[in-house]
Image 1 (cartoon, rainbow, N blue to C red):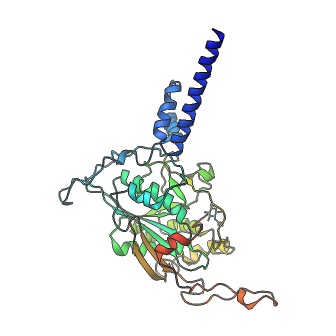
Image 2 (image 1 turned 60 degrees about the vertical axis):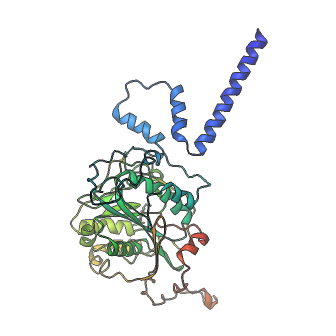
Image 3 (image 1 turned 180 degrees about the vertical axis):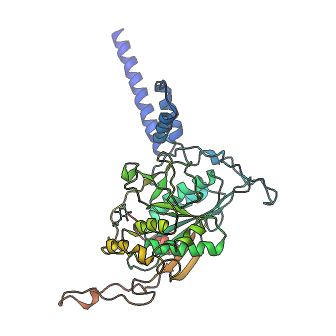
Length: 398
Ligand code: BGN
């Protein structure tokens, strides 16, 4: 009897072990919904769960971002007879489970988004969208992050039944990164193509974790990335305006766009926040529960050093905002590629010395070799397709 019991226990443990391994594998492959279903069978139901705590629980599990899109198919051949989409999309599911599977390829992202057309454009197949949103992503050397962002952003926006387009604004050359100026370029280039009613200015490494965070504009400029994992899902400070923000074209023009002179890391988002109030507007925000983002971890980047001038510049925004912004932005578009998942605009934005001027050399020690002077930005850029393969990790804003 004892031996029988022993072997029965042994079998039970073996079975449990096998189940655990299968669940771990399923979870790794992205079958989180099924895994959490199994887990729920074994878990006791929580008694007296309030609405907030159930939302809180869901925030930690979340669903597969592609879950409720599989039934969508091109139903209408003509777009004219479509009814308006409902005010709240029935496809919205709340929290999204975000992981970064190592084997993901851009081809796989394309395969999972069959209704996205050339240039990264989409409109709901069964109804006329109520909103037209452009996503502007400043970029350099971050193809790996871009792939994950596209993997999550496309279905996220489709669940919200938006008519949308994704624009990647790629800074050509190796000169110091300038996030805010790239946003100005993105604004002008996107508006040139379509009468967008809202523009989302989006860091490449921030993944939204809840699709109730709707990518539409409010009556005031909106700061969407209110709760990031890196700040413990809280605002780091009251005036923070970084990460992801949304402005209607009218908002953008009222504040003269973004500053063009912040080269390197830091301060430009604070300047933009100040511009909002100088333009006579307020910052609107989603709730902490909804404006949640996961940041893709990465090392510090080359070409985006901390900007030591940011404190002085920020202190002068009140005097400078009308002379520096959308009314003075200068750049040269080097290429525009309508790729399957986004429009890639490669742009030469020059240096702080001007669009084609060589910046004043940094004072160097007398014995330093002449070659070490500031790098020239005038290097001919590679074609966007080629860059996709060759460039390595680079930040937009951190
Ligand atoms: C702030 C930076 C922001 C950055 C956030 C979050 C500055 C200006 C100082 C006067 N602002 O400190 O640019 O987005 O941290 O990392 O550095």
